[in-house]
Image (spheres, rainbow, N blue to C red):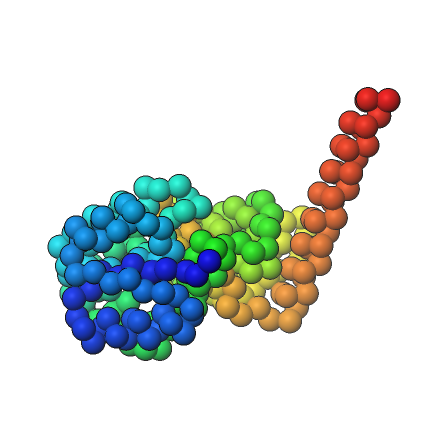
Length: 241
């Protein structure tokens, strides 16, 4: 099923720019000029992404409403903002990505590329494994934020921080794979975040050693789970003999 995006935008040039960018990622756009109309469309249909101009009255409320749905059905929310808009408030409203006006083609493509893998029909193509370890987000040389890992696969991870994360597109991460001394150093794109400090990230760059360590760890975890399932199945079969 083709992905669909709902756009709240009144600027014709921005609409054309958005339509072109979305088309490159095979996403169909439906555009409306008012929050009321957008709300009615959201009530009748299912959208994988919302692109909201936060200068239009009601856009912030739409973002908040979008996050009230079931977790696996929530659209990815893009907030289009001006230079004077408070970025923190957009994330608190439920925005996953920020797009600065006037829209820049390169930023739009980077954001869509990161979000494309998280949109509903594409989410978590690889199964994620629960993992407990500390993940350090490295915001420059002077700032390292410790967070707790929730789950992990070869595409990315989800984390829990003590407070809402700074608004950035990409951040270096460092962590030890659970139960090992093998470190993973990578760059990760912030795909979604909420005001509780919870966030999801996709790897945008993994060095060779980190990729190898992660692949081996995932293989071991997968084989252990398979072995446990097989043992449980044998026990259940024996109980019926």
